[in-house]
Amino acid sequence: MVSSRASTFTESVIREMTRVAQQHGAINLAQGFPDFPMPAPMKDAACAAIHGDVNQYAITWGTPALRLAIAEKYRRWYGIEVDPDREVTVTCGATEAMAAVFLALVDPGDEVVVFEPFYENYGPDAVLAGAKPVFVPLVAPDWRIDEERLRAALARRPKALVLNTPHNPTGKVFTREEVDLIARLVIEHDVPWVFTDEIYEHIVYAGHHHPIAQWPGMAERTVTISGLSKTFSCTGWRLGYAIAPAAASGAIRKVHDFLTVGAPAPLQAAGAVGMAFDADYFNHLAMDYRARRDLLCGALAEAGFTFTAPEGAYYVLAGYGAVREAVDDVAFAKWLAADVGVATVPGSSFYRKRDGAGRGLVRFAFCKREETLQAAADRLAGIRVGA
Image (tube, rainbow, N blue to C red; front, side, top):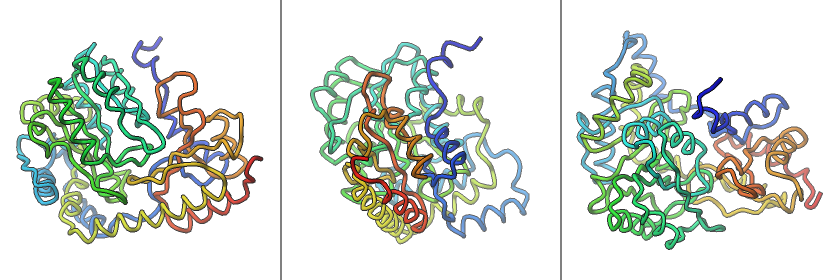
């Protein structure tokens, strides 16, 4: 027998497709992890910390050096003043940060507004907290906000809204006007919290990243979640963080303590080094990802996929109707991995479970070396439109 909570959601479809890729020897464009090295100074710093015997528990909510580096980064980049001692909690990845925030700030029965499509973890996070997700679909093809549907959802007085920008899986970067709309409606309807997932904040190709905590009246309502995994190409290090008002941080820290105790101490020492990198690093990060995006998007267009080019993050959510008709997304993704040799994620995993949602879509990740993407492009070139 299993708990009713565990029976209401499945294992990660993203991680399952990595196993499918391994089974068929497919190029893994499913799971969003880079296949190129992280910055050498951070690796050197981690090794130095290990050899310097920084191998025991860190302070539960994060080493002082890393929390100070996070606070300084938000002051430098966004003009946001953060108290490193009272408002920052370092976690085992942004994934744990979001789970801890749900468990710390949401009660059973509370409603939480989630834009759809959504990163697959948000649904299970809501279930584990006993919350009720209220979905607001983004409008394709540019994935814009439907103001009336958002207004109706917030008029229900939910406990929180989840905002992910740049957005996984669509690559949408919410504009200043859209963030302003969200902030205005949240304040108008006195919604207590916005949980903002900003893990791709430095991977932007069009527009700019706008942290909602900058808006008047929003700092005290916002929990900012981010991490080092995507910015520094170290997804296996599992270093994330949550920035929240002091009282909320106290609750988040308690939950985090009993979930994982703390993030790896020597890696936190190295994380503080990365947080101090100058703007040149972050600018080159975005430029390099833009080139990868263009390579993959060109290959997908040639193969007959339809999509809106992502404005940020490193995913393309693509329609395959002209490639292989009358096939559901799970079957198509498994065919693509087994017969073409390119692994993707079925689009339905980013939607609530209802008929047709995401069924004609798959998500490609382009956080890979140019030669990896070119090899995938060569395989996709073998697809004949309408086959």
